[in-house]
Amino acid sequence: MNDEAKQAGRFVKYKINRLSESTNENAVRAMLAKLRRGIGKVPGSTPELWEITLNGLPEALLGRGGEPSRGEWAVHTSLTLFALHQQGIDLKKQCMSKDGEPFGSSVRKLITDDEETRIKRRFDAAATADSLEEISHHLRGLIQLLKAQDIPLDYPALTEDLYWFQFPEARDSVRLRWGRDFYRFSSAKNNNAGKDDNHAD
Image 1 (cartoon, rainbow, N blue to C red):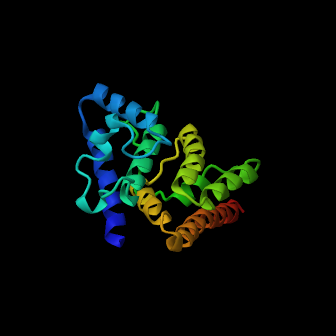
Image 2: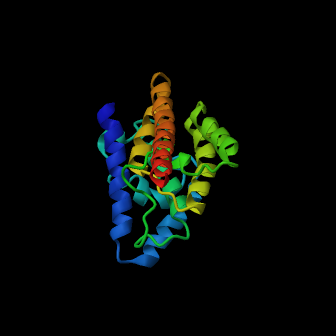
Image 3: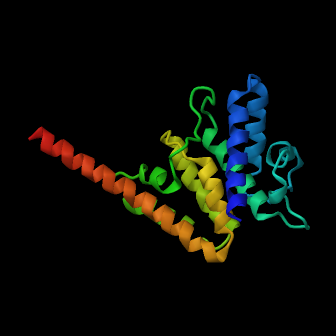
């Protein structure tokens, strides 16, 4: 299962790279628009998305029955949210998927003194969701906030998190990682502020 989570992340990275490297800007814009229309929908229910969400998907991630697999859910959710994040931003100049920007630390960057309670409440709602449908709803609002402030997010890593989130026994590990990243960024920011204050003296 660990390998399947990583395969899902690599697949999303590959698809985003393909979009970033494409010279057909009109086709890229059209695909991103299609992906945005897939937000909140069941994987596979929108045929116009199959080309990007299913074409080339590793065999281990493909579902076998009538319901989407965990891999299909993770990939679909991540790519549709990426398309929302990228909306209105030139993909060639600024890709909103950036390695090393995990979910928790990206959300933490949204916080200002007067926004902390509101952002933390939204973050907690996402973290305590009990299904991928529910978490997708909360993520959508947070992604819109990240987009408004040009804060990138590691979408391959988010894909892996979303894969594991579908296992009830693994859900708390994902939550713990998000919480650590959220407060690790906060601690680093506070430490740097302290250094700056000392330097000013």
